[in-house]
Image 1 (cartoon, one colour):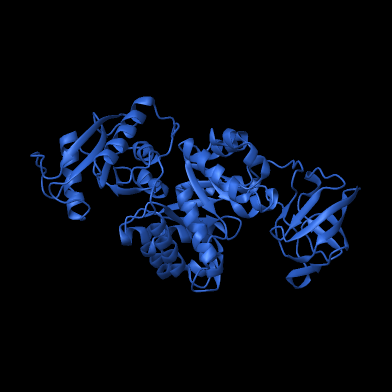
Image 2: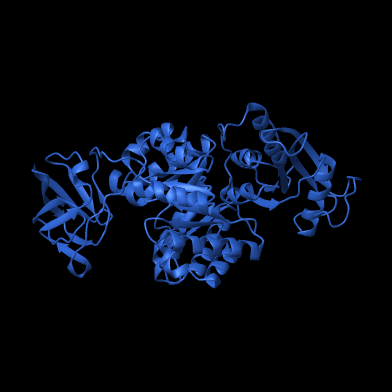
Length: 478
């Protein structure tokens, strides 16, 4: 199955064994998400090690995504783990994370939120709605409009209110530094609102690709500014739906994906994609349609959260998502051509080569495109132009190999450093033939740089017939 849309799966209690993670990789997991809102550094270290081992076992590139908590505001704890609040009741919100009750709810960093009378406060993923009635002495009196259950440590949203918290908390900084030590391939930055927030993360992680989670109304408004700094954007539909309201969410999803793709960045659609499979063996028809529409919208990747972290059927859920993605990709007109901007500081010449490769592959109906790449930029650029061909990215860099696992349509493969373009083509041909990706006499389009093994040097487009190159390469070299 040459599935182009990538699958991100969150690891958790339901998917923490070596056997389950291996099965998830075999089922189609391309990216393993480590949620740093939960767990310890040692538990994440163990999971990352299991992912690396499973990827090696199945000879597949699997990226490790570190998702930091960010400045999320949560309630404290309650006797029994939760409380019920009824419509019309008055609740006092106090700053802190201690124990509360249905009448007095502790909220972390409440003093950092600029609240006014009439502002809305949303809890339990927007199911519980309150309206501010008074603000006095550090306490907020709010009336419950929509009743419901508030559980321990649930998130709180304040639509439209200014929040005076840094984009990178002390916990985030500690986690990011640990992630660098661990060698994570990607970082997801939570609750960002501007390009400045991304720059704060960048100061810590350096060249590690950053995915901006679009989950606040301000982030949606400031998307162009964020995309100028980030390597990708995630449509985090849970919190974004709470902030924007549910009705505008489908339009916002399409707009975020389109703008992200146009910027040449990675687009991810997330939250409740196959939520019913947390407990059921089959998805609902609405969920199938939701995943398919995210694919047709142009997502580079789709993400599973609770389904694989705490669900009963993590492996089956990945298989189902892979099948839905593959079926959606067979739709007429898919993939839609994507305009592209700069990717990771690329220059116009490599961009022109990548465009020519994708255009030529489409004109000649080629099944395979080959990109020789040191940093991954050539493969990412070709992917941006959405060729219908499989994109095989040969790289000598293990870091690039793993990072390309999230990129639409790209099959990364490790490749030796060779001294000439002829040797590279001959070696690539042998690998493609051995894996059954191409057949003798088949045409492929190749993008490379002359001389080899240099970053940002893509300057060659070659149309190559498999089996036609007389250049030999010693047995055992690859």
